Length: 312
Image 1 (spheres, rainbow, N blue to C red):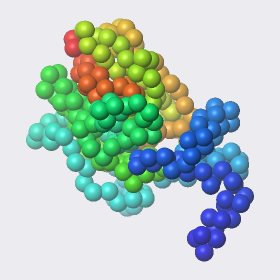
Image 2: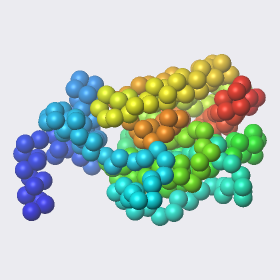
Image 3: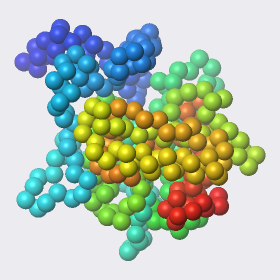
Image 4: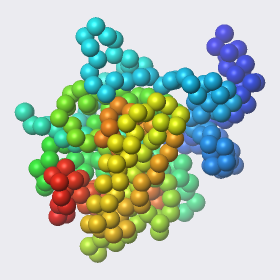
């Protein structure tokens, strides 16, 4: 019955037959993945998200909230928490001290995003789709760990990292899984002032690297979702926070920020009005570039929370 239903959908919506690559490598021909970008620019359809195909081909789906609705605060005792998946307790690094107020939380919707030069002795002929790894020492998990460490140890800001690999089972529904984790962070740490979903982008190192203090640093792109496709009433608050952070980066280290990109999807930012998607570097960057940026960004975040610039 399930296979018959899938066949029916594929017959009516041919684009559903295309599968995006997952963390283990490309699942479609390279030419199809190249077409992914063209289709997204021309039509607004994201082949990596089946919902956008449904919205494009069946307009009424645009009125339906397909992802799980998650509260920005704890549900009432007489309500069931809508959790589409069951996640193990989130591993955190470093563990917060007793009675410590956690002001910043870092998590990773795409925790397997990694940096090609750190993964391979030679990157010649390597494709962006290969820059994924479950090794926490070669990608964004290590970057998030450094960001949290510097916030805490250098600037005295209570911070925590959720190291759950929400995309290890595939990136197609990783945002639904990480939304559960983001809501959990907010419940467990009611004093949170900022939540960062740390990623790395895809692009040429020459465009995503600058020199700061004589060392290469990965440039930072902030992404903010809107309410164009799904309900997101406070997205402009997220946008204001992103613009403030980008301005502080530019003020402190000109060129470190790649600006703020506004996109149609919510990226879980509907669960909290100070949740930002942060792209640190790209797949061609060295891990060391991104770690340097994590050190610099921690100072900037600390300054923003304290009301002024902080020295790196």
